[in-house]
Image (cartoon, rainbow, N blue to C red; front, side, top):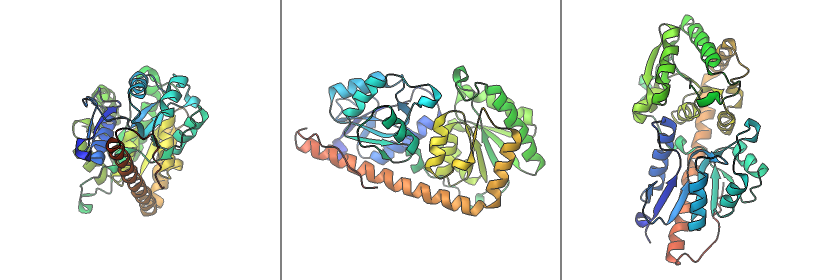
Length: 341
């Protein structure tokens, strides 16, 4: 069977206009081309538990379990996991049963790998990076704005964030943005999904002198905006993932552990502020810290992203080779995929 004929059913978040989910899915479709990767792929040859924080959470537990029970061609590619530290782990036994049946498990970050081990996963686990790191900005160097900072915040459902207070986070970010404008920076707030528009736009309005854009309306335009900017201050996970993909340094506002997991995976752990323990002054200090060694920070980030792009492509190649060989063998093999780091 050629790769053009391989059909992979995608298990992941796609029910909203969340730009992070869209970016991950787009990157995976491009990565696995010419295979068909689709949540509605008919009579699939394989099932992928895709990017996003899916493992040991409720949302994808049932479809992942059904996939494990219906086909041995099941794999995890670029996922994150619920974190026991945050108290969000669900369906431990079910998810371990799913993971036992995967021929390959590749996850977003080192914390995710450690959590899987902590929760009982005995399978080999590769750290491959977030799939959205494969995306690139098309902005030319001449278009870069040396005084532009993008800011993203999010109004998390049920205040599920460190500190459980969305509005306190917004207030501190607004204060920091005012301070940055006073220092000569241009500030643009960007929303990553429509349900956050009014919340993010209100923050831009409270700052005074800040712009607002709806980033989720165009992945390409948002990638270019990220690439043209000097720095990103981001709360939503993929605001900083896509900043890294565009080659732009970031300060991450860790509202859940997944933000630190990603930042540490690209060597940016010191650029993380947790939402239950930060101030406007702390944001300003992080911006100044990046500025003091900007080119070195940017070069180190570029190097890490390039490494993950290689890892993602190599893993996708090995997964496709496995699926093709299994199809030729009449689904008779049950070997696992090993990817050389």
